[in-house]
Length: 118
Image (cartoon, rainbow, N blue to C red):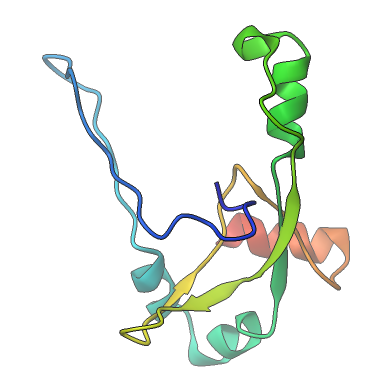
C-alpha cells in the first residue's frame, strides 16, 4: 500500500496452497532495478517525486466490486521515486503499477513514459 503516508516496511508472501503446475511467482528487486540503470538516469530519478493513490482502488470497490466495501476514505501521498534504506544506505525504486499515478512536475506523457519504463 505505497499510497500510505508511512508505507509498510516489510511485506511477506505466504503460500497456503499451490497448483500441481504453473502458478509461478516472479520476484523483482527494486534495488537491483535501480542499480542497473545508467548513472545519469539514476541521478535524475533521485530528484523526482511520485503521487501514490488509493483512490482508484476505492472507486473500484464503490462500483460494486469486492462487495462494495470501502473501509476508509482513500488517500494520495507524494513519495520520492528513489528511496534510501535507513540502515544499509541502499537505494531502490519506489514505484508500482497499482498505486503510482504520476511524477510531480512532469507532463503526463513524460510521467507516463518513465513510469512505464520503470
